[in-house]
Amino acid sequence: MKLELEQVRHVAKLARLSLTSDEETRFATQLSAVLDAVEALSAVDTDGVPPTTFAIASATHARPDEVRDELPADVALANAPQKEGSSFAIPRVIE
Image (cartoon, rainbow, N blue to C red; front, side):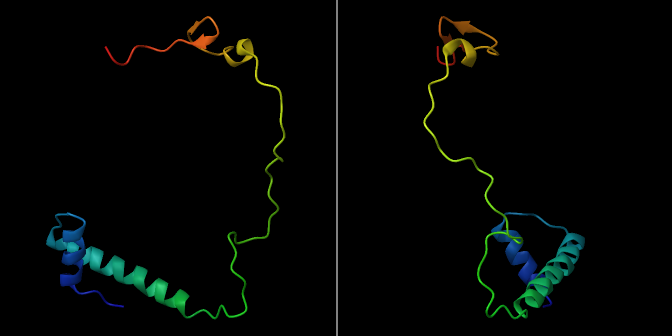
């Protein structure tokens, strides 16, 4: 699908882009190539192909949810740069 320069200018205006004439010509060619690729994909027969979320079949690797004891404060604060008692110490943001 060949894009006209006026179409490229319209898209650039919508995106609030200021393009030189060389950029308009280059983007017209590049956007036309993208639209040609999408058109080629549209021609692929997908009848009978179930919709999937992944290109390959894969089992989920997430662990099952299970209730555990809470994390002790000393373990949670072990790598804290600063702490006050059993809490993280953070710099004051609002004065």
